[in-house]
Image 1 (spheres, rainbow, N blue to C red):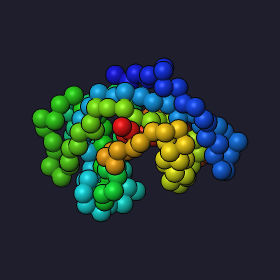
Image 2 (cartoon, helix red, strand yellow):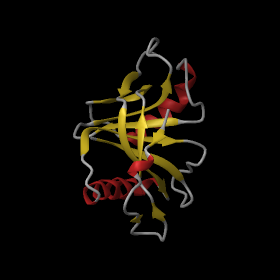
Image 3 (tube, rainbow, N blue to C red):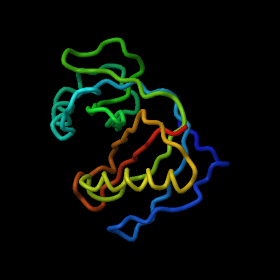
Image 4 (cartoon, rainbow, N blue to C red):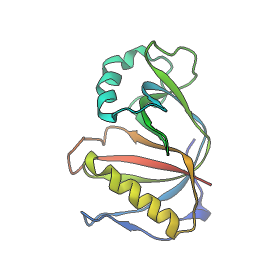
Length: 166
């Protein structure tokens, strides 16, 4: 369950450098998310290489939650990337795939608007917003949620990005 804490309404908006779109970070409380996918946390990997593999093998993963969504998971300050889907339980992990549990807790999140190649700018904006609004980030987990709004490099593409906070 994603619940936004209304008492923690963001104090400042972020203006993207390349557009006139203002992005409003919000604080969310997430339960843990169990993810199975391709790639691995702790090993260097190119995110662009794991997505095609995930989509070619996605039917092998059972117990999927949130059917239209896929997740990209990054553990801050570590190599690695996991492209996967959220599942009910980590019982059957297909051969050659990995699992990761995104910890329950508070996250700051916002919608990335624009081409995927600009995701670095969105994470930079989120981290800057945290500092200017007196939030501390954990060096634990960041994740992205992709759904039907995602269109790759299309300027109209959208997906959500989250960083765990204390």
